[in-house]
Image (tube, rainbow, N blue to C red; front, side):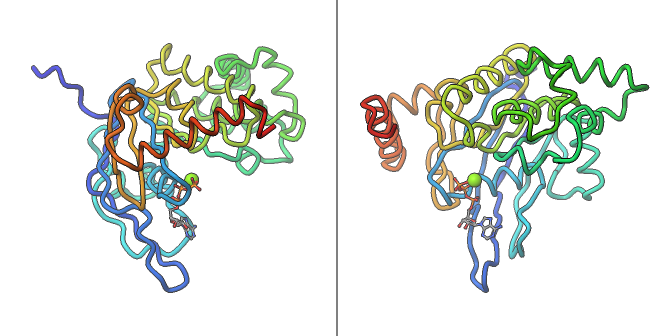
Length: 275
Ligand SMILES: Nc1ncnc2c1ncn2[C@@H]1O[C@H](COP(=O)(O)OP(=O)(O)OP(=O)(O)O)[C@@H](O)[C@H]1O
Ligand SMILES: [Mg+2]
């Protein structure tokens, strides 16, 4: 028997080329990536490098724009995600544990419904209202919302940004996922709340052995959370390393400059320059 774990989610030679105003944009151009069970993997890279498009391809939630080429394979537990019908894919997301969280929680919450109703949507498999209520409270508590009963009675606009993001994470946890793909889950939040959401993700990773694919600009978040990191540039992976190697000895010039820029930003912030 082999000791090497099979990847939960893996991409091989994935290409997503878009047609934008008659021009081809090679948003993702031949990417290989693996997430092992329980592993936390980060994708970093400058704006426009293709991180979100890759995350979307890996969950088959492709951008709403003409796709000139979609090729390669994305496998989730051995099944080819790119080759599935959208119904099979929806079932897989709902029942087999591939969940996704996006950057902007407000656009994924319905402003006219209380949180209770929206969470119930993700818990339709449960037998009755009582079970739904109990599970909703449990999920909200798991993401660190202690006053879960109160939160259930509120509308999205009555929550803070960090609370909304945590509600979305709680909803993503409803199908008891094996992996959570999160695109910039903390970008819209202020620093303190960012830290809380990162701690929440870290706890879910440790306590539930939830694997994660985290897309972010934030190298601090990578350092806090990730085991393995992929650096994207111009639609390609330019470096893949475990988090210690990446921070200690970046191989690629681009990674070194990304780290240097993050350190400068950190220093400027520490000096109050970007207050
Ligand atoms: N819906 C879209 N319409 C037009 N172009 C798009 C669309 N989505 C992605 N692109 C293009 O694909 C390329 C990769 O974009 P993507 O959003 O994946 O980058 P990113 O690394 O996530 O950037 P950011 O850090 O700013 O979120 C960019 O050139 C972008 O302009
Ligand atoms: Mg993006």
